[in-house]
Length: 199
Image (tube, rainbow, N blue to C red; front, side, top):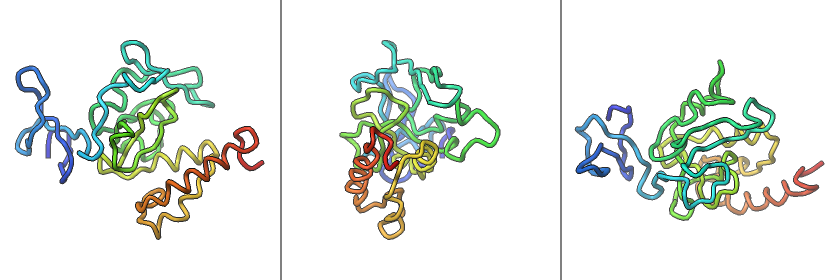
């Protein structure tokens, strides 16, 4: 267990400080500066650059807009939100995690990942505008994803895959990848009537 309180499990990478001015990735179970950078099958992204994130400025500062909230016209999320490490990136952040009684997902570790280099469960982020392949993953950080269902319920988005979760492995849409077909169908349904789904 490192200083960040992260226990390394098989397949996770740890960031263990620097060596010669560069990041040093190696087995560091005895070092106190280890931090989880995601599983090898789905490493945490280190930058918004190259993903066409429209709401990140030229230095990578992210401005997040969330409809019907204090962030409707944008909130500054800084330059490292969701990047580099598995962490509770949402802890203390507006509009949902800086209030009393914040949802449980606010304290769950996750990170952004390159969807084309991730063999674990990941989902497109509603916080990133115009992005091209930068998704979020709780699984790479060995954490359950309670955010996705919470956020979809908040927005009223239809999600049918939960019907298959128990029989299909217990994830938000199971682990046998049945969810890919279900998500495609749900996406088509949600686009009906000009994006309003069933009216």
